[in-house]
Length: 373
Image (tube, rainbow, N blue to C red; front, side, top):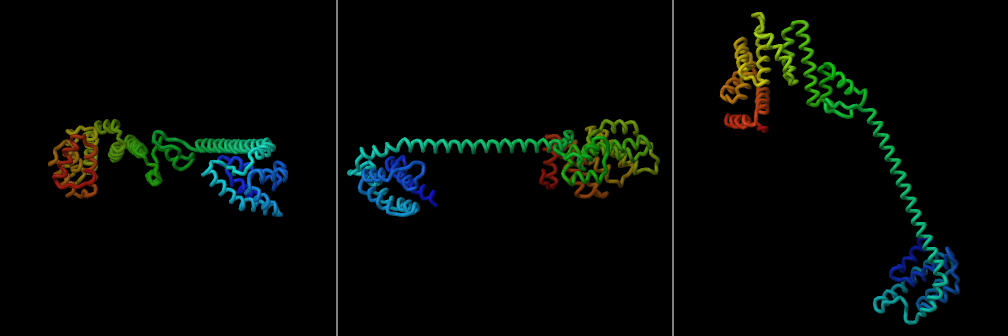
């Protein structure tokens, strides 16, 4: 309460605008509160009289109060009259002092206390500077402590993580299921269920998918080599194509062609011819791709897979009428509309820019409406 009253009293006359009356009120407060320095009643009374009639009356009024709090309250309230009067005088005469004031006496009394007041102000300034320095020091210490804590947490986090740069995956928790599956996938195949789980938790990047199909392809290829299971060669070819690694499977198919398959295994032979044609298509060997597709269609005329191969190749080479004709045959043999749409999209995005423009115009002209066109 007292401190609040002191602050209110000292704010009556800001020093920048009222230097004399600011000092007067400051001495008055110290006289009332007897704090910092001892201001004699006689000195304050002389100063009040020297400043004029209003300050003389203010001194008498305040001094008539009993308690420190009442005196301060009176100084604040009755000091407002002095402020209004001084403010008006500053506007008209540009001075704090009234005409009746005795400047010489005012200066003598104030000079008697000025060194003490200056000393107090300096101590206050030093205290403020010291408190600011302390606050800055504590803030700096806290910042350093937080920085060290964050650094330790970052190092701890980093130590608990592992990067898979070959899969473009970073910060995987060590010994987690993801870590174990990706580590395994680097060396050998994981199960389809495990691969689907990786996808479900967001860890199936394009490189992970490619690696999965490559490991799957190696597994099928080794089974074919070891057990001479022709279907495993078909499976290996499909997986190598998805992995976009064709060297091994192309040589195996080249060496195995023309596929000495028993006559009653038409489905197998058609599948081998079709996947061989697909490998040739991926390598842009369209002549052999068409040759193998036609051969596969001859073996199994009612199977849609050779038809889709031929449709894709002809669209890729710009023979659009033939391409649509073969896709129509595929649909007649059970090729679904969704699968057909995906095939067309795949052909389009694999084409060169020049072929894309031509194919786009053809698809629009033939009534195909796709958002990706």
